[in-house]
Length: 149
Image 1 (tube, rainbow, N blue to C red):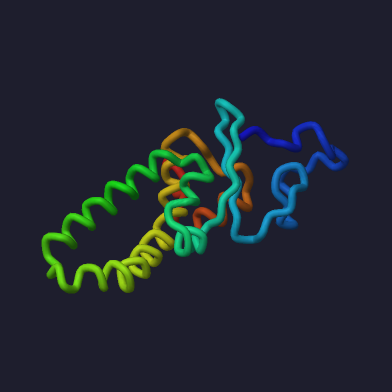
Image 2 (spheres, one colour):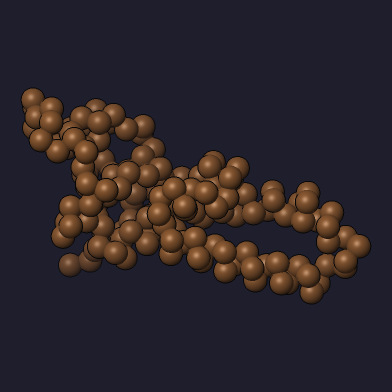
């Protein structure tokens, strides 16, 4: 996604302001980071930390972000887990387990892991933190490690 505010609101030209604003003055919550691909100029803004949308509605956040790689990874893990459940949980208990306990386990696992999976995949595609605030936030959450010289 290109920066939708490029060329607009250039009153102060302060890209790295410290008041929590994102690109071109777009307000960001304190737990959101902005990453950019320097080669293409594509920009992504996403939350750092637990993903409540992935906890409540898996796998829709991957679809809405067009994050097909992580969607396929998640579906592969889910398929493997379903195969193990069918093999090891008695048939009389399987329906009850998959209706009550399994969705909660899924929510905890994917809510905890999805945002870090998303950022790591973006970093592998060449994205870097767009500003110091995002870099510090990603480093504190152990999503980003500064490259060694």
